[in-house]
Structure formats: structure tokens, C-alpha cells
Length: 127
Image 1 (cartoon, rainbow, N blue to C red):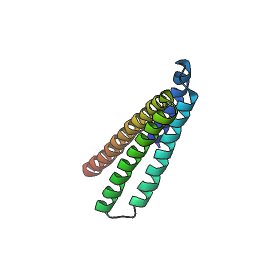
Image 2 (cartoon, helix red, strand yellow):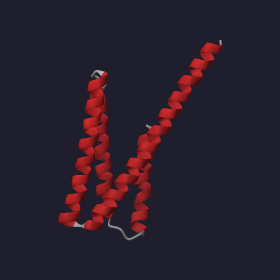
Image 3 (cartoon, rainbow, N blue to C red):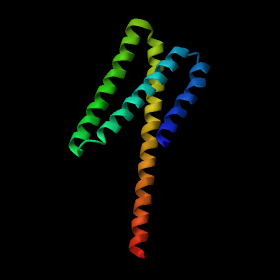
Image 4 (tube, one colour):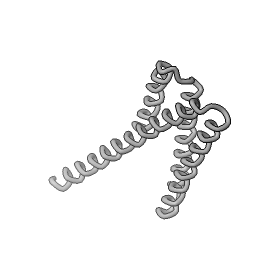
């Protein structure tokens, strides 16, 4: 949940920055929409992978990651070529900010979980 909150905060913080710099609102909307779609597919894939064996789950999530990355890149590329380069660049920046904060949030959450588990095991062993 922390990772999701961090990425959504990044999108919200990006909005006034984009507007203050005179960037197109469409770019912010596209970047945020791409992030939300990416996140939704990621959640669906993770839920699906939980029902699989370890090797299959790693394969499915890895393949999903690659497909999502290429899809986002393709949409941004087509947007830049067919519509507006500035919109595509702003969208890419917003998406990358959300992606980075999501990854940071996941790393912090994972580290916190591992510390809690390690502390619980240490307390159990010390009793």
C-alpha cells in the first residue's frame, strides 16, 4: 500500500510542477493514466501468479513486466510521432516519477517487513 501511495503522491506533486513550467495538462493526464493502467495490470498479474508454482509465477510476472514496459514505450512513441512531442515527454516524465516512487516504496516496505520478521525470530530465539 505504501508503494501505491508514494506513486500516486508523485503524480499529484507532478501536476503543479507541470503546470508551473507551462507544460500541457494532456501530458500529465497521459502519464498518470499510463501509470494507473500499468499498476492495475501489475496487480492483476500478481494475483494471477499467486495461484501458480514459483517458476511459472516468476515467468508470468517477468513477461508482464516486459510487455507493460514495451506497451508504455510504444504509446509514448506513437504520441510523440503522431500527436505532440511535448505531451509525450511530459507523460514520460510523470510516468517515470510514479514508477520510481513506486519502486522506492516497495523497497522500503520489503525492508521493513524483513526487519520485522528478523526481529520476531530473534525475540523468539532469545526467549
